[in-house]
Length: 408
Image 1 (cartoon, helix red, strand yellow):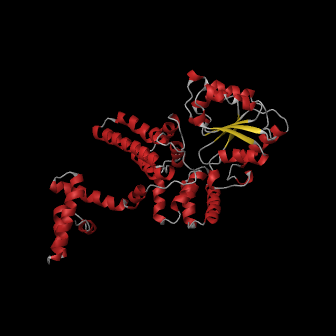
Image 2: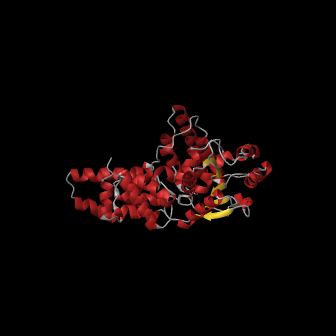
Image 3: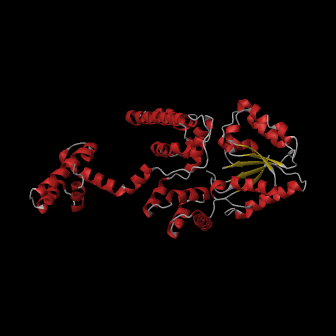
């Protein structure tokens, strides 16, 4: 879900932050319309700062017709060169000036053998229409072939105050029940990423303040909503796999995100069955990797949970549904204190009962809890019961209370 789909800005002036970059885009457009020759632009910067939204708004404000390609379109030289005839004229039959946009140009692994790089350079050099490429990192080696052939426009991370102001507008417009403190916390955690901040606001709308802590589990290196977009909205092998690799997120965490959101994107019964089947196989390979300590299995796991899920669909999904924060991750965050207490009790009991930690946590604690409960019900002094645990297991009152609550 792109920022342009959520935060419906009406003009370039409403783009959050990055005034200098917006001014550079406007100057580029003015020069083009005044007949001045300009090199293609490379608009770059971190995810979620409004690069794509700004470029689209620039074209819309000038009445330019957009010819757009994204990473799934850069398959080979032939598919790229098919665009050349359409770029021979500067305007459509209706008189609208054209602009070519290469979005996500650093998300595709170009292969030297298919000469796709030279094909893109050829289009940029011969095109009669302005060309704008969009990337996250201008220094990415995958787009090194563009250096010296483009002018650059940098979009930077947006300041916390600007993000908070944008969130306040969105909250008022959408009727979110978010307190000012929550908006400030989301803005601080966004790390300059407006889109992820707005997605966080959607995820936390109507939630308790405690769930704000769950946002810290997100990896900001490659924002999770963007990774999910690459998986659910792609029809190629490469794009989902690259997105997952760049996410640098733990496998079980990524699986939770995909599992929660498959029904959000796929509605056809056959698509759902195939997607969950691919994810189930991925979990199998993950379990084998952990159990055998042979992590080469992860290559199969990664392929299944990214490209496998992506290619499971026969029906292209709608972009209207927003992503949901995994319920399991929220539950784990909220039960963190309880799990820490169980771990502490388990450690103390192992010194006496000599069972493994899993058995103590899932079996022995429940039995002991039932013993405590029945002893008190049968008339035993609660003080005596506590002293028994204090003496034999070196436990505290709150730990004995925790065991008592685990009665079967």
